[in-house]
Image (tube, rainbow over all chains, first blue to last red; front, side, top):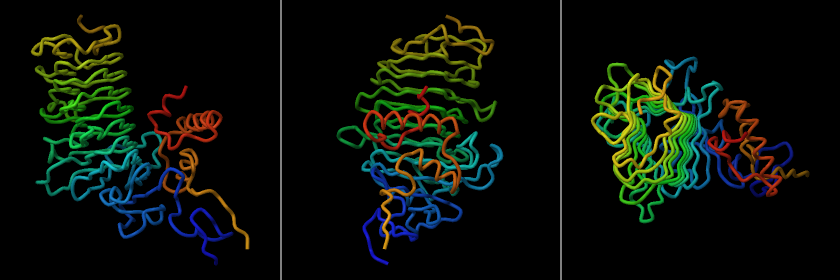
Length: 322
Length: 65
């Protein structure tokens, strides 16, 4: 058999040289936590890696990592978690990396692909920490198991250490599940989070948390998603929490929310944040919006975040108290 | 000897090709509705620029009317 460059296929034979699945834009990697091995190439389903920890060290700009679902996928109680040894870190150089869950459960694709903290406890960090601009996450579940790292959260989009503050810029998250730990948006801008579920537990947790760090950020969209409590007696103090900063033009649209405690907030925006909240539904029957931190469940310190009052409804289906 | 040039990506040069191949291997990464929207999106991109723009994200696929 003659040796030919990548992309040339000898009739009836295997691809010659390099990866089976290279592309004009990317290399595709595959993770099968049950049957895979990090000693393999990771470049075909039958030569899949075992861990995401290793895969992110091999993948680079524009690459795609497909993650196979684990075990039974019949309902939400049948998750089979992928437990990484420690925090998975996506480096800054992996611009536009995509990490995508694959499952036979088409209706709820995130089922079956779950990542959690190491079970031994004592680690610091997140399940996934990202520095790369343009990261895409789809069909994945992240759990801060048993609140081992509740003070950190499940996933962090971090931009801070880089001089340009471009870390995590333009990330997109679709059809992902954040359980117990929050999604931290610690920098970056112009992101889109859609079709996700946030299940918080423990009073310290929020669902979506953001800060501008030391650089103005903004342009974050959170749309078509659900925020709920893991347990009725363990409701989070806040579901959406943007600390005081200069995050401009955020959009929160088509969201539903579960319960909060009496002193809780559905949304809490510190001063200098601006944006719009519209088309949302809240479980509480009685709630208000405004600039009173103690009284308002929808709080904006300086009124910079506006609410489309025609579309904010409480559990009875009527407009919130204006 | 016959050499067949199949392009540089046998798993799929576009996301829709990859999705259809993935369904033969492990399963799906999107519902059927999104796959239909994806094919429409790639077709429009190809008409406008000669080829699809690249790996389409579901946040963008979902916006296709």
